[in-house]
Image 1 (cartoon, rainbow, N blue to C red):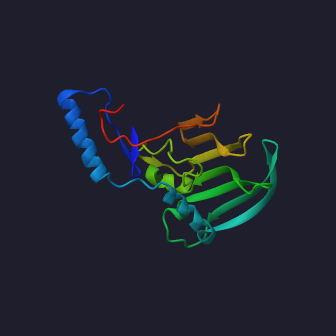
Image 2: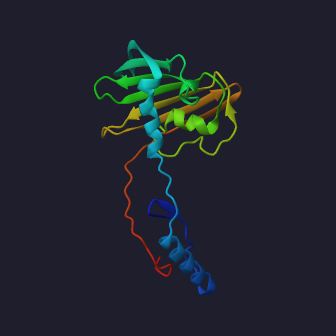
Image 3: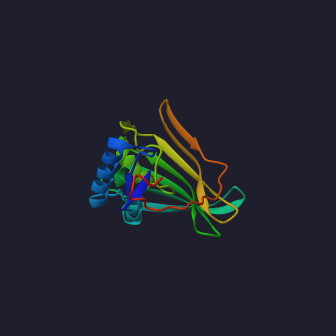
Length: 193
C-alpha cells in the first residue's frame, strides 16, 4: 500500500508479464489522478462549534490515572437549530497540568445516524474510527466513552473507546504502545520492489 497525494493506492508485488503491464498502467493512471483524499482532520472542526452551540458547566476537579482533571459538562442550548449539535451532551475531563482532554463521555439525547455520531466524537484523538464502517442508528440514551493515556514520552493516545446502546456494546482497548518508525518512498515502477 502507498499513500499518493493523500489517497491510498494498493499495488501488487511480484508480478510479471501482462499483469506487470496492467499494474504499470493502473499506477500511471493513479499518479495522474489520485482521487480525493479523505480529510479527517476537518471533522475535528465540528467540535469548535460547541462553545457557541452548547451551555457548559464546570463540575470541579477529579483525579484520573493519578492526574488532576477539570470536569466540564455541556448540553445543547435551548432552541438550537442544528440537528447534529442538538443531539448530544458532553462531559469532558481536561488535564490540569497540560490542558489536554483525557476522557470524553458523549450521550445521545435523540436518535442519530452512526455517520453523524462520527462528528459528535469528532474523531477526538485518532484518525480512523472503529465505528466508521457501521451503519444504522444510535438511539437516545446511547453513550460513547473515550479515554486517553499519557505515554512516558508525553504523547497522549487512546486507551479505550466504548459505545453502548441498549444491548449493543462496542469496546476497543489499546495497549502496548511503542514508537513507530518507518521509511517511505514513492516507487513509480512496479518492477521495483
